[in-house]
Image (cartoon, rainbow, N blue to C red; front, side, top):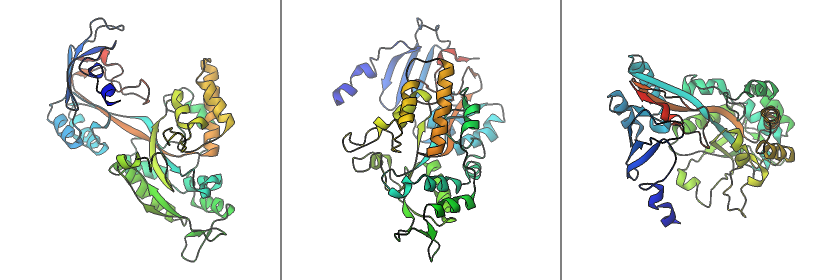
Length: 367
């Protein structure tokens, strides 16, 4: 497998039909690209592109401020770095900072924990989070709260919002739902059920992923107000992806996915629930099992009219917000920065699939 993955056909000798061809490649360091004159959509306007791989976002920020690079994409600039660029660099007319919401961040309550099988508990824990305040604190209001995994750029989004169940911040409603589910405050204020179990559980996310860790801390504080206690136990990506932890957790977890309709099935179809038999590789980490939902996802990935697709998207959103397989938190911001003189850059509105940040690079130009 390693020899296949490292074959030169995937790097230095790559053969494709895109707008640029690989001229030179230094693994994990740099890549030189040259315009392909016979590209199907027309010869690119920029003759040559030099790409550099720089993992440190502060180094990228310094390079952009110094005018050493023309373009930074995806996670190369942090949100805080983007705010610095907007307040200084963009304000001085040196370029443009684009902040788009192409994916979503969710909070999952373990499919293996019997407490969370009661939808009233899931609804209560979402009602207990002030998501408007959360996005204001994390992102200065630059990205919106997410209520379901559908891009705001999709035609169906407005109708989907009207069809969806919206969980506003309401501590009294949260307490009421938990009481109905059998959870009452104990002597120290922590919720207990009739078995004497205390609502205390482990809360994980990716260590070093700053936006997730900040959201986790804020959510934990909100849950304390309704008698829920969590223990933070974050792990680096390599441990989360280990055989012992892959796609499962005992309590809560903050993660993210793309929200491309055509890829909903990969994340939410019953056949993609992680199990010991499939080595926990599939990505329906919520464990959402609903025959009608599966039928919708199957039909969405068949040949149907645009009108029928929209109808199915609306029905899916209604099912999703009723069932809450994930607790949606916010649209995940993606930072794209273009230096003055680079034209044609258009941020993507969805991630996943073929939705690359450079999706229209053949139209870019320098003036």
